[in-house]
Image 1 (cartoon, one colour):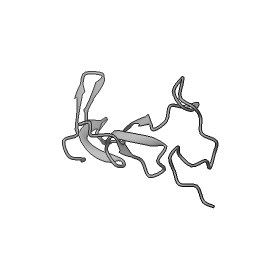
Image 2 (cartoon, helix red, strand yellow):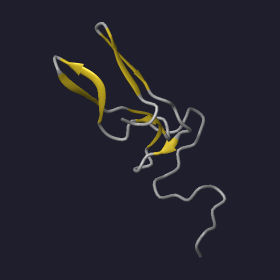
Image 3 (cartoon, one colour):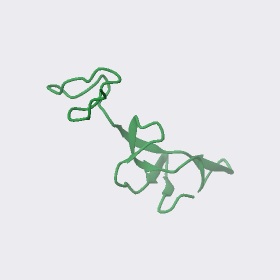
Length: 88
């Protein structure tokens, strides 16, 4: 199981505790991962005698869905950031 991940069963409730980390860009760069099991992990919990597996990804969007925050200009696709050198 992933480091510091704890999974317990309390009656009909599955309790998952996973540490949060500094937001890290995902492989696509579209999101920032704040907690992850990094794939499916076998837990110590059993359901009807069968091992329970768990996969968790907690993230935020690198740029809010739908574009920049209100008041921030949207950069045209392929445009260089302000201050970038211009090719001549």
